[in-house]
Amino acid sequence: MATRAVITLPAVVQPGQAFEVRATVAHAMETGYRADDAGARLPRDLVRRVECRLDGELVFAADLFAAVSANPYLSFWMQATQSGELSFVWRGDNGFEHREVRRLAVG
Image (cartoon, rainbow, N blue to C red; front, side, top):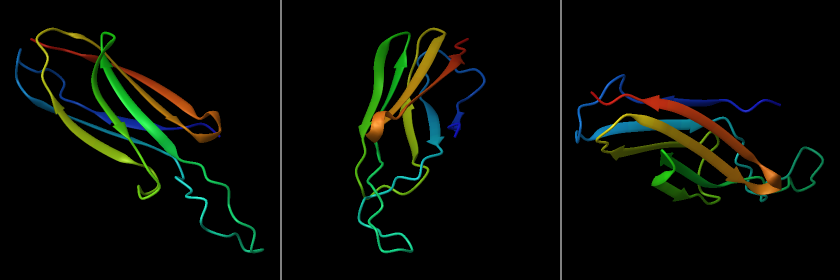
């Protein structure tokens, strides 16, 4: 199954201006506490960590836990003084890893 992420950021930001980054990834975030129709416990499958880097420098990170709903949505504010590449990575249980890259335009 292909993972889908949606990332929203301004088309262009002014140098030093604070701006919002919004990101969500399609993921079930199964806690491991629920049972299926046959009564068997569903295995835990969580996104554990989300990171965002601007040209390789960490600008945001979050550790997620079982209380986070499916398709976790994150929003954070940041500043940049020059254009660059924003790279996002979601890591989780069972070897889950999803990466996305967006170009950030500062001007």
